[in-house]
Amino acid sequence: MTVSGLGTARTLYTPIAAPSRRTPVDKNRHTDFEALTAPDRELIFQVTGQRVGPNFDPEKDKPTSFATALAAERASGHLAPGQPVTAVYLKDLHHRYQRASAPSPIGPYLDKALSYLARSGPRRIDVSA
Image (cartoon, rainbow, N blue to C red; front, top):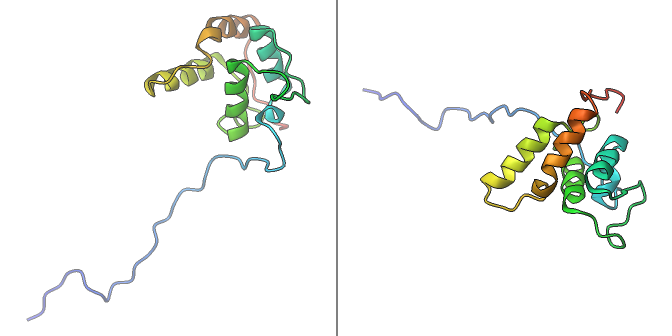
């Protein structure tokens, strides 16, 4: 009599995994602020009054928590190249910090950011990026 079931005669196959959806991060970048787009920089200026130009040095000029959070989101790939910062995205980011029981770096600036985004009209994805 034979017993069927698991045995050593079966071939193990590695499961098929979905490809990573995040875009690779540029390893030559020196700071997260270099990943910011022109609309990101304008949003930061309108919300915080701080100019974060292409050559912004966070060591010399202390960045606001809003600018730092936005730069980190862009540099990590959470905000993909060409993806605009929207009111929905900022609210979600704020709620992610709250769910983690961490202080939200964008919390003090959220109302002003949402007001600016509402005034500036709908955001469109930049497909050229």
